[in-house]
Amino acid sequence: MSKLEICALASGSNGNCYYVGNDQEALLVDAGLSARQLQLRLADKGIDEAKIKGILITHEHCDHARGARVFSKRLQIPVYITKKTFLALGKANQPANVVWFDPDKSFQLGEFDVHPFSKSHDAVEACSFRISYNGKHVGVMTDIGQACERVKAHFSECHAVFLESNYDESMLQNGSYPIFLKDRVSSALGHLSNTQAYELADQFAGVNLSTILLSHISADNNKPEIAEAVFHPLRKRFRVELTSRHASTEIFQL
Image: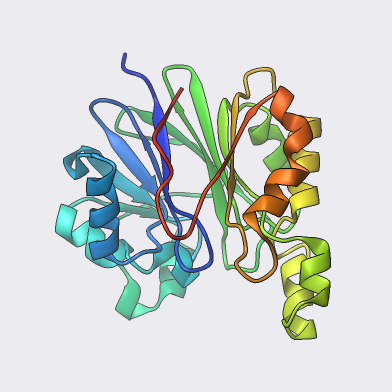
C-alpha cells in the first residue's frame, strides 16, 4: 500500500479545504474556496485532481462549502454531506451529485475509511472527521466550540491532525468584535482558542500522534506566532506546523 499524505490547501475564515490522499486516490474535506482557486492550489502542489473521489462537507458555513457545487460538477465527483447540512446550504449552493451520510456512522470512500462525528458548533448538523488508510488516522478538527468526549476519543486515535487554534483570548476580548460576536466565538458553539487546543493535544494525544497542523487561525483575533508560541512546549513530542488562509502547506507524508 502507498503512503498516506496530507495538505491544508486553505485554512481560515475566508476558506477551508484539507487534502488527504495516497498514490491512487484522494479526498477533500470541505471546499470553502472557489472551484477555480481549488484547482489552482491542487495544481500548485502537483496533486492530480483526477485522484479525488469525493468531497466531505463538515457544515454549511460558506468558508467550508462555497466551492462544493461547482467543483464537484467540474470533476464529476460526489459530495458527501448530511441531509440537514444540504438543506441549510440553500438551493443556489446545493451540489447535484450527493451521497448522504449520518453523523457518528462510519462509511467507506474509495480506499479510505471515514469516521464522521458530531461536534459542538453553531451549525445545523456540524461534523468533524477521522480518516483512515493503511492503519494511519488523520483528523480534521476545526470549528469546535469545546472538546467533547467524541472529539477527545477520535483525537486520541490520530497519527496527524488538522487542529483548530482559532483565537487568542486576550486579542479576542480586547479586539474590535462586538460583544455578541466575541461571545459567539468563545462559546461552546464557537471555536477553540489556542489554550483549549493546546490542552486537548497535551492531555488526549494518543501514542501514535506525530504531527499537528494548527488550523483555522483567526486573522482578527490571533497571530500565527502566538499560536505557535502556545504550542512550543509540545514540540518535543510532536511536529507542529502552521496552516494559512493565503497558501497551501507542504504535503506531509505519514
